[in-house]
Length: 302
Ligand code: AMP
Image (cartoon, rainbow, N blue to C red; front, side):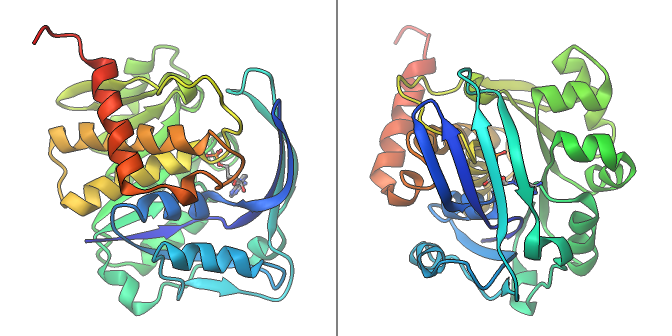
């Protein structure tokens, strides 16, 4: 099966307690694509400027990501600068330069419309809706968002969630959107707006899946050394969607496994700056840590 992703491709400047990196490859679509590429074919729709480094195209090509939908326009690539607090669940955005992203109009190549899964990464909800209007049969739709859109464009976001099968958001975003402090009640409220499944991301504390069958919780993988959490949410989504697309299944047991694959990949991603660790993984690395995850959460006597 195959996955169509629409999102940002960026040059990020990142400061954490471990140091600072300038203009490293990033963006929601970039992180998602590399993560999902370990499972299935990825079609990427996005935009970069003429300054986008060759290394970025090569990295995606090495992972078999189809780039026919990656437009290169006159101007500069989207740039984003962030500084993390000592508690890395919190960060401040210091600068956002939309550049070519400002006038981005997603164009979906014909062959991409055969994708079985559509991931609408965290971009303006009007762009997410534009994509949905271009793909007549989007298959399984998975959408992500952020506080900015909850605050500024709630009506458009409402339209997106109504057309989504699996909606992803963070715990603080779920509370903010529903004005409901209890996460389970917030999740149930959001499920009534359209999606069959809701995944609430809790940063280093894991992720919660809620649907009509009940709830499933996966902890974050305990790590002694977290270098840079940037992209963890997109990488998590890449693991989840990648696994579901590979199996072409939405069964509850497969959704649960997908959450563990997402958490596994996200745990690798935060071990280095940018895409350094994620882009050098082997399938063996992934399976080994997936197994450790099983041991970590086992509590029944054999
Ligand atoms: P995450 O850490 O999962 O929230 O993802 C961070 C990535 O999102 C970075 O690589 C940024 O380049 C990208 N990003 C930050 N702000 C925006 C925005 N307003 N629109 C699209 N992408 C963004």
